[in-house]
Length: 283
Length: 267
Image 1 (cartoon, rainbow over the protein chains, first blue to last red):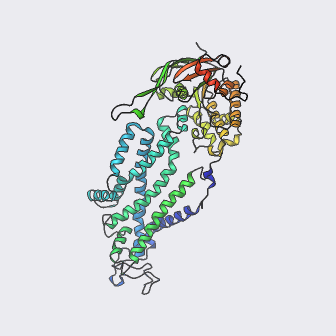
Image 2 (tube, chains in turn cyan, brown):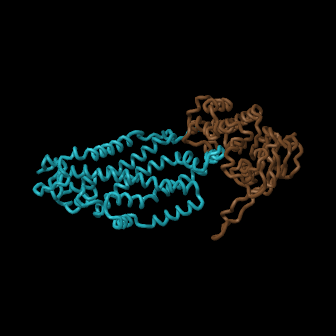
Image 3 (cartoon, chains in turn green, yellow):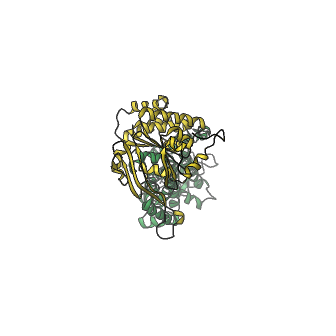
């Protein structure tokens, strides 16, 4: 009996390529931002304020995507903004995953009082409104990159531990776990060598999703001006600025928003693609 | 006596009945095994038979210490394992192995067949793994090329052979086979049973074969233990049990075997 899931093939590589391509582009942009940027992202030129992007009437070819109300180059600001977005996505996403998945694995496989404590904690945690919780945390911790990352980890670990716990529980009931015990594997050995590999595709999918969410949270915090210093170019900050001049200069809002949208979408699609890639049945 | 591999005495196992659990306090316990006493001799092929809920799988899993009994004693080759902790059990585990009912769920879907068979041997400190894996595959009649197949690429019968190969690769003294053919179609059932029969002969295995199907048990086993609601109702040699069943419950089970000719009797 073959597993019928293996016969369903839906554009195998395409979503991996597209999402991976955009993210690679973004990584390169972030690394080489100082070389790629045509202007200093902080340089203001009030005589060149609200210049439209290159294809519109009255555009200045020196400012490819136009300028904001202070005459700062949008393209340069977006390139520098990608640095913060990606740093937050990678660091906060990974840390959240480590904390949440570890607790979820412990709760789901070891059960007993560990599960009781962790699950109640998750329930309590999830009752807090996340955005308010983040704002509160930043207010206590002070603004800055580290605070943003801490806030994201503290708020979002529950997402991982819930899903991983459920997965680990269903995997733990499988006979291959009993069979590993018959073979003499220790509890820890079973959790790491038998259950973890089977939960890994789910963790990878969640991790990339979480990276997308981290980008959004960072943008939200920037939007309410609680991210890092106001001067530093961030996508959320740019969107917040663009909002005030949406009728005069739509591009200030739309370009960073589009970059944000593509990035979050790419992260989630990358996760789905990787999940398929890692699953021996689906491959 | 040295020719006994298992000596069980007054074995009691209970599970908490969570459906009856009061809001506060512990759930009442349901007695699953109500004091079983029997021996298994080396080289025996013991059939454990009983209806669903009779405790036959629980008995098997207690014998290989996947479950811990409430009370009673389980002597395996003279050593008491009833309440032994997992660390002390580990070196003993290579001596008693298990073949599971559902071969899909008992094989880790992320491992290739070679890794599945080699895993327990690696844990138990065997050397020369790849040669041993090939030998085990050969004994269960699977080609060596199967070492890098994944379980989902195999048929049900092939998967169960991998499960058997994993158990016999360790050269255990005792194997528990828990309803191992009930998930297979009739022709795979016959093949797996033939294989097991042959392995019992060739390797001199001591086997406990848990099943609800007396016709399967009759073919394979030398001795039969009939369980009913957690108690032994009959413990007899196969030939005696079929020709001269002592307990009413055994007679009911025998009558339930479908026969091609309704007037035929077992002899």
